[in-house]
Structure formats: structure tokens, C-alpha cells
Image 1 (cartoon, rainbow, N blue to C red):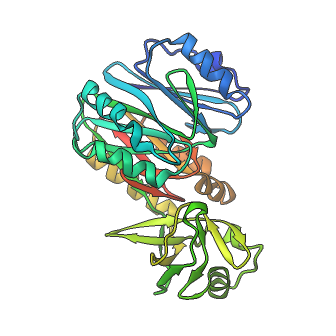
Image 2 (image 1 turned 135 degrees about the vertical axis):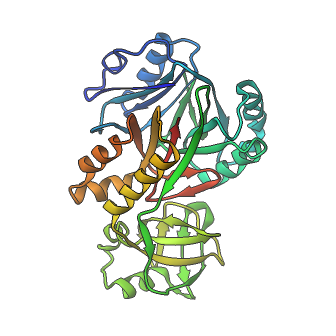
Length: 351
């Protein structure tokens, strides 16, 4: 299979589509002002080709912050695209769409991936989608777009998740997740006073969540939102750790970018040697896939901000380019199988 990447910093879809012929699956990454226009134009240009889209920044060797990016697969993939609607209340109502698409694509654990763009309620959405994917062992990766809107096959949806099922007819696929954080000290907290609907963390071990965070890290209220780049929370999930970013301070509580429940056990994390960790990820992918057709990734907005502040973002994209054809987008939350994580990178590699 082949992966195409086209972009326009001025938001010209025609410019971004130059050189794209006979796509079999398309992903649109647009800006909030031109999203509607781009969705309609793309469907007119390639009618009937499975497509998904969201509002977000695309990247290859550079980041398109406010234009348009196109990622397309061709020459050896079988794909289907669709949506699950009403994700804030009942995404399972539409699960038969995904089940039918799985039958149509006919994929297996070895050669098929589900890529999703979500408009919200990610944890519930991923649990729902996984009920269908796990029957075939199919992996998932994706992320959250901006402005609560996604597209599929030329239509725009709110309160929905758009997904593409992609079967690689030329070889294997595999998903990866990269975590650049490790545990700080031996702190362990039991969460309480949570507001699940609004992702609010009220207390840790019975004390104000904000005050606990401030006391350990010796930061002010104003410094909390930038300190989360270095010190997010973590929720232990088996042998894995799901990163929980802090969104804002709400009184004595902390609002986060993913749901925290009463009685969840949390730890505090600290930033590791991210340059070395990225090299380890690249080396692992090369060991698993000596021959790579494409790599599509989602990097968290907070990773993008951190890497940019550290002067590493361009170096990061150059490092990842060593894998070959690497492209992706900046998300507001990352998806890895049935897990919704923050401040991470997820990707899919095609043989």
C-alpha cells in the first residue's frame, strides 16, 4: 500500500490534493473556518471514496497549524468509513454499522486497523467500539478533534465518532503507544469528590486535589496548567499507565482532560528523557517491521506544545521520518485500542 500526504498552509484543498490519484481511503485534517467547505469539496472531488475528517493540525516534516492536510491510502487497501452517533448518550445504538463494516472489509488482527476521529465522550466510545473489534482482534488508534465536529463520507456530524476500517492487502499492521513519563516518587492517591461528566477531580486521599498537587510540586495556582506538561497524573491500568492531563483549576478541584472516578488509584508522573524514548520507539518499530509502507500517528496537543517549547518538534518529525513515510495529526486526546489517554503518541504501522 501507499500513503499520500498533501497540505496547504493557506487552506487550499486543491493544493493539498495535488498528486493524489485513485485513493482508497482519505483522512481530512482541516481548520474550524473551512471545515464545512473542505468536507463538501473533498466528497465532490472523490465521490464514494471512504473518508473521515476532523478539525486538527496535520504534520509530516512540518506542522500545518491553520490550513488543511490530506492523508490518503491507495494501491492495496480495502476500507470502509462510517460514524457512531449520539456518543454522549448512547453510541452503542449504532454499533451494527461497525459490525457490518467489519464483515465488508473482512479483516483480521494481522492486517486490519480501525482509525477513529472522535468528538467527545472518548472513554465510553472506545469501550463501545471495542465490543465489536475484539471479536476479530482488530486494533484501534485515533484521537479527538477540535470543536466537537467530525465528518464521514462527505457529511458532518456533531456528537459522533467517525471511523475508518483499513485492511492492508500487502502485509501486516500494528498499533503502538508511546509514553514519555514515569512515576514520580512513591505517591499513591485515591480519588474522591469526582464529577465524571465534567472530568473533575475533587480530592486525593481526602484532601483538596489542587492543594495536594501544589504542595508536592511547590507551584502556584497559575503554574499548575503549565506544570502538567512535566507532571501529569497517571492511572494504573494493569501493566500500563494512562496519563491524565490537567485542564484547569476549579476552586479547590482540578478539571482534567479525561474522566476520573471515585476510588480510582492515581500516581504522579514526571517527564522522562523523551529524546531517548522516541529513539527506542523508532528502534522497536524497525525491529517489528523491517519493511514499512506507512506510519500514521496522533500526537497530543500537550506533547506538541512541550516539544515546541523545548525546541524539539522539528527534530522529532525528522527523527520519525527515519521510519519512512510518517504523517499524522495533533489531537486533544489519544486512542489506543480500548484506552483513552492524554499526553501520549499512538500510531499504526503498515508493512
